[in-house]
Length: 183
Image (cartoon, rainbow, N blue to C red; front, side, top):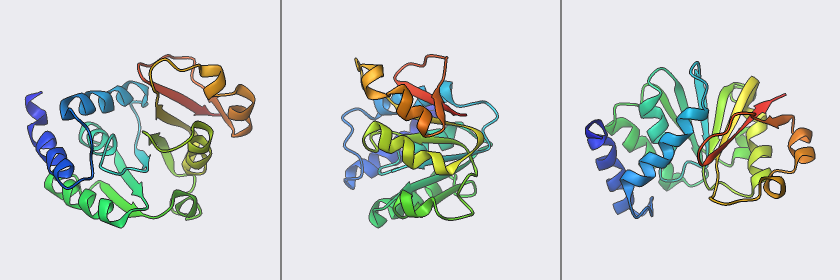
């Protein structure tokens, strides 16, 4: 997309600095765009777990023009790069970059239970990712997680374990992402 010129340039600079390993940045942006279908249109606050090099967080922040987006990662260098990237994209007024382990960040009363959406891409094991996301969710919030192709959903997302976390899989199907709704 023509409007992605600046976004792609910023992502390229992140790749040059070793923060991203994507072979094709346009394909990476297209994959991040798949999250949008699973994000409610009234999303006001979004938290991205393990933002690393900025995917999908920077893409979502650039697309969700009225949402406040928090990018998280425990690697300070990566987060410094994301602060610079957010400023370069003129997103820094509504993007916050937090360095820390998400388990510890989830104990912060200002973050706990305050997000409409929590996203994750390549964060960790499936149920671990969900358990890290849940403390950040506001009532009625959703978790959107990138899905690898051709996975057995019953094995990857055991219904009893998902329910134990206070979530249920969305009845809607989305391409390459899975959405969970807070019970």
